[in-house]
Length: 456
Image 1: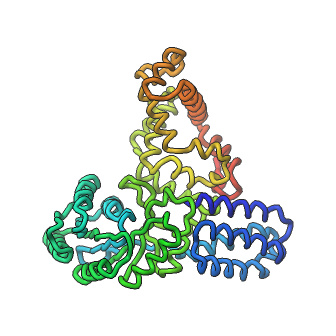
Image 2: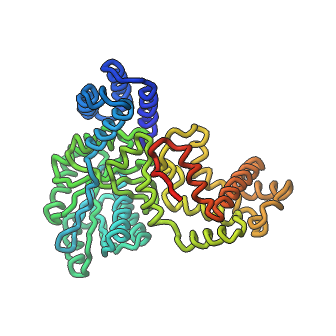
Image 3: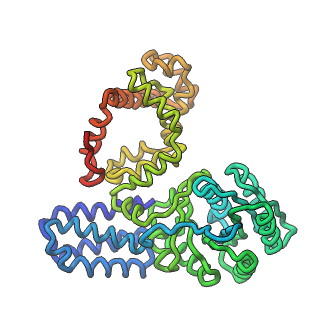
């Protein structure tokens, strides 16, 4: 997400850093670039205007012009104003009410609503440790009811059955009564979507809102629709007392216009980002962290939290002990590390949180994809256990067999072995306190201020 916007803004920043001092003229040029970057990202025009006006008001004053490092101060202002547009702080999901806390999900057809219901059920279970019930009131699409039933089983949430012969408000009443009897903490209600906003759809969801009296009414919207997402959210907000937005499919959105427009247009906060197809791919929305990502500063806090939640600590400890004892890091370990990264939401998603990755050469970014990781895992899976333990024995005929078995080319096998060799050398450096040296080496290659200073 935000790749195009980040690229334009970082180029503008680079040009500013080349200026000895800033004047009203070169601030004007920089803001023109920022304005074009936001418009190309499909940010709503009224949002762009207010953003540029606020930045200009601060930038042409003494705060920037009298600064010793005016370029850096201007970036600080842009960063702070991005946070201001997106809502200052994380808006937490509010479940503080007499159980069951009802969460009503609204949105257009195809926005990812049903999947988001399951993702949210999983998030509530894992982060708030609450018993969750999900129900579908979408009587127009039997497939949506079946989809939610399967997803509920996958995420460990209770599913309340419904069918297309029932009335949506009758389903809602029965689900609410069931939740009360069974001591459910949170009830998440999936509603029918339409291909466009219509009076019938709005009337139905208003009736559901009256029956359920939800503490949270979340609007689910596809980020790839850009400023249209914000306009649709505004229409729903006029008909329903929305409490927040779930922005889906952000992993496929290179622009990010919706994220920058929604809060300003609707007055409602973005509460979650859908960052992938898997049920674990849901992140709380932190405006300050997203602003840092946009400006290439990374998002180390989210990265650390992701690792805390999803890294298999037992496996990680075994590998650390193995390395410390000087035992070889083999292809089994290499595969395991890639699988762990995939489980954490994908390699590209992790790398964009690392400070400075936005400025990496395009060739490196192209290699940092889940598709490439899956290809490498397939190659390792085509090897024998002996080959994984002793990669040095993999020569001509073995390479041909491995390539054929994994549906790849010999060059791909060679590339894997080269990458493994580099990883093996890195692991050797970790032995005997070498981790600190390696981290210092990494720190020296990243932009100033990206990481805190490392001490022995």
